[in-house]
Length: 109
Image 1 (tube, helix red, strand yellow):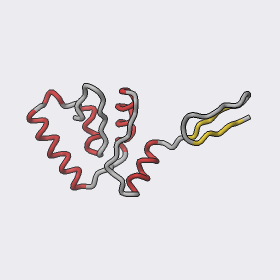
Image 2 (spheres, rainbow, N blue to C red):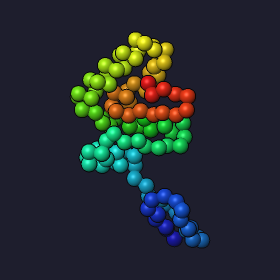
Image 3 (cartoon, one colour):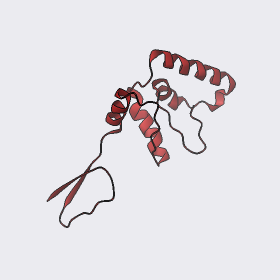
Image 4 (cartoon, one colour):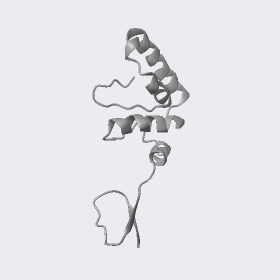
């Protein structure tokens, strides 16, 4: 028997049941949030590895308009002048698209 479950936990699993949990992809949810003009938004991921992986996954999404992108670029240039050793190059592409990760001990840049 195949059991389709929409959403997350908790749920009861029946015996002899193959469980498939249907959860929307982050990129699809993000597009809906953007279309409904609900940005900025905070997305909680409870894994350091997951945070960094999702920033890379979302690099193809552009959440900033051209004015916002210019502002981010300006702030990053200023930050690089003051704190060049604190820049995480792996985060820059996501930042320029409006995506960032924060976890303990890590600056957004």
